[in-house]
View 1 (cartoon, rainbow, N blue to C red):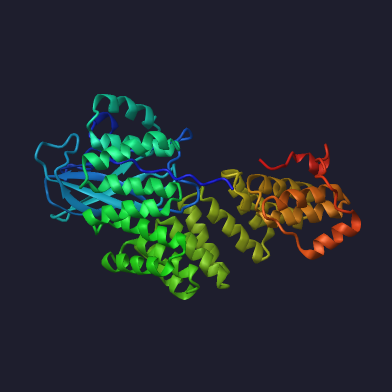
View 2: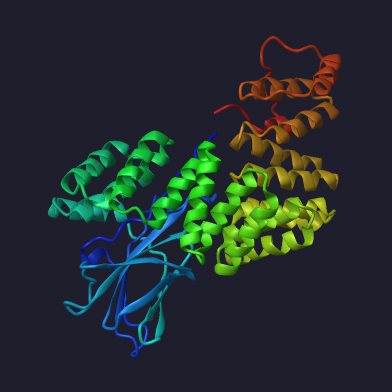
Length: 453
């Protein structure tokens, strides 16, 4: 199965040409906000399509009046005083660093809200940037060989390109040059998570924890790592502690809800999801989780509303579109389900559940040829997608294309597919199993060109 790639937000870099800086939002607030740029791959994406991990957004605020609160897209940020200088701010102006966990897509814009001690509040907007970060960082690194912020940013950019050979020496250099520097261990841990090397990631996170035990994004990521490994009790305890210390942090409630849902505590999970969308109504992933959970409990109308809210916030949110199609299909709303699946396919044609869902709605309407094209596409992009393979085999059998049905069975077995005994009995009674895999036919459904890749 194709591995989902994770893309990291790059840490802020102490060079003017790489810094994204917002001027004062109004004359009433004498402040500057600096935000790190995202790393990008060739398509400009910096977060995988499926929301699986918290992405920390980092930046700095310089203000002439003490800052009391910072939020990004409505989510409260973890803030700390720093001596780091913000480009464009007067020398000596008090500065706060901030970090906030968010789940982002490439098209997402960011709004940093700053509140000061005098009660003033202002928004600083940022839009996605398509700068070729990697090439610029390479050029700058040649000029500033001992700039550890810059070298860490370059390492993170290399990770986006799966260039581990170039990334690892930079992470190693950063942690050796500054052994008491938290970001070096934290981002190295994230890189190990991208390789599914849990032990090495946890070791780096533990080193970071010893330096900054209360860093929220790191704690969220580490607990998520435990959840993905199946250590749910440990993950639940950590998420509960984070949400207790930060009761309005939507990401913590959402992650806790996911952990509880995995453990079968559906009512508690729904409660946490509701708290998450209350704390941050713009957190699309929480609306998606809430909608899915409600629909699973039979509250399908309310579930659809939450899923619709998720795709309203993030129009290209493929999993939410697919789940909405599934719920509408369960309600007997075939046309509406088809529209939801079609939007998902248009957004991400390599998302197998979207192809399969669209196929089921088309087959239900008697459009078997169209349905088969989507079923075949589903198993091409995800060979383990057994539901689609079942439908392919049944449709081949109904058309008496038994050689192609056997072809699907044999190729599917290479990916762990096990058809039902009823299907195998029907197929064997119609045609003995060939000793070698039949070739795909040149016409009809067989002409799709499907095979293992």
